[in-house]
Image 1 (cartoon, rainbow, N blue to C red):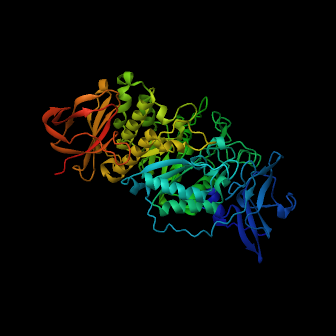
Image 2: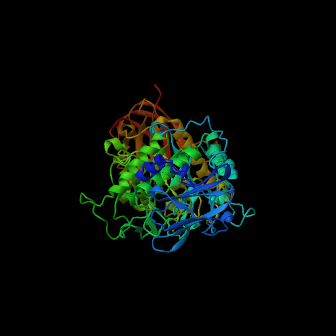
Image 3: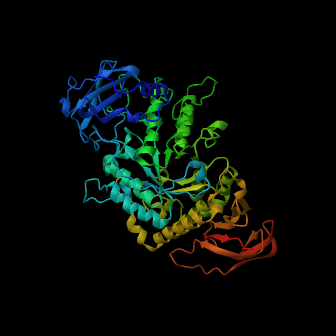
Length: 626
């Protein structure tokens, strides 16, 4: 057998610069000497032998023996093999142990608990999203971004279809696109698409870095999903995990009898808290594997963006460990992983996609360009805003004045990075309670708190993300084994929350002062951040291109009514109310009279708006037109 991988491909792969390793690694349908079949390529430099196990080789190592080539890449050609056939690799490690391994580059895999790889062609799908104008990271900064975070397996279920109740990608695409369009979200972010063996990991312990999970169908079905979203004007963000991988025997761990994909340093090889292996980002071939994977989803599935999980774990060697290794400068920064992230971010940006960091660290420059010394992400999850705001909401309203700074501190740093304000799946699981039940109060007050929370989120600087079910006030914690509580969405109080979010989405998308705020502190201005005794805040959001196109926001987190409440206004005139949390159901109107700013000092302003502020009422007012 002659080797099919070119010297140029081997060189790029071995140097850590390949962005398309998936085109020659793994299983590919080809013809050799006039015979159709499948060419296999496997990186296992320390293995004593490697074989392809499949029906064509009688599932024996002798018939499917592979030949080792330069760079530790083993190759073989199995004639007459076709798409849809199962295969595995038998790897005899340098330690003498034989292991059955799934293909790290498999495009398709069996449904768990089975774990064979499946031969699958890359091409053939006819895309219909040619008119889709996705936004790069740079252009998206000046566009609205309101993300609906979704776990497809529990968004909706139908147990008449299968024991798990899973809907297929195509059905999900049609139904989800309709809902997202109705609500007004701009993007969906998908949890658990990369193949994974354990449902309870939610897809964050990946064994198939190139395989859309077979829980909902075939790879072309997932292409249809993305295609459908784009044709409906909805961007698609994929959760992606380049930090770690599970210990499953058929996966990447100890792949050729040595520490191949994981770090060879025993201290850095694992994340004890998660029970997973840490990728060795210092190894060139591992970087080629991961970066090619990122580019694969963008090129082959038209993914608009990647949300990179667990970035904080890659930034410091001591994350989740009793201690960390010191780098050559005496610090615990993981220089190899940081270099990998910078390389990754450069490559993703070059593809016209954008990339988001799920990062709880305080390291500066996460969204600063690499050429300026930054890490190079386009966006960072604002975990500080989420933690502080939910702490405030979780405080009884009687005592909130003591925690007022938890609500008002975030604008101090809101423009240091390009942030996404997140109320994600992580905050509604494991006894954390759903968003509706965060406030320690009776149910009517909890609904009022929830609408106030969402008003603050959608008017605060930063892009937005909301997890499924929370936009209608699901009263149960998220559980991947059941669908979200859609039956609640038609009940009056829950429907009021849904319509509140829908109105906020519309206002957010149609007013640049609420979305074009990238690293521009001039787009936010406090009116009153110190009214802690009454649990009220007020502020202005300004349009960076036209400061006259501004809105004034008042948020009350108090159960008290304040008759004759006064708010300072910068200019006189009529302030049109465009939103109140009392405008709940579609078509309802608040009974607030017209608000006119009169001459008179208030909050350090020359003019005053005076009105009766109801319990937990939040309002958005358009500035007077000139």
